Length: 104
Image (cartoon, rainbow, N blue to C red; front, side, top):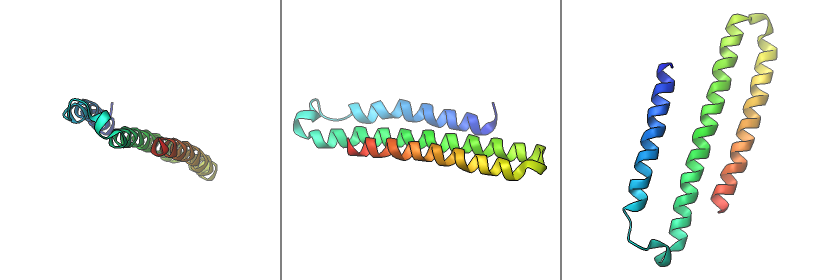
C-alpha cells in the first residue's frame, strides 16, 4: 500500500469516526424541531461521500493511464482517449449521484 493510499484510508476512517460525534452531539429530538436541517445534513454527508468516491476513481484512472503511457509510449494517444472517456463516465455518475443527494 503506497503512501497516498494510506493517507486516503486514514482520512476516510477519520471522517467516518468523527461524523457520528457531530450528528449525535445535537439535541435529543432534533427531527421534530427542524427536519429540514437534518435532511440537509444527511444530504451533505452523502454528497461528500460521492465526491470522495469520484475523486478516488478519477485518481486511479489517471495514475493507471500515466503508468501505462510510460510503459508503452507508442500507444499513448489511445490510452489518453480511453482515460478521458472513463473519467467522463465516472464524473457523470458522480454528478448524477450528487444531484440525487442534494435534491433529497
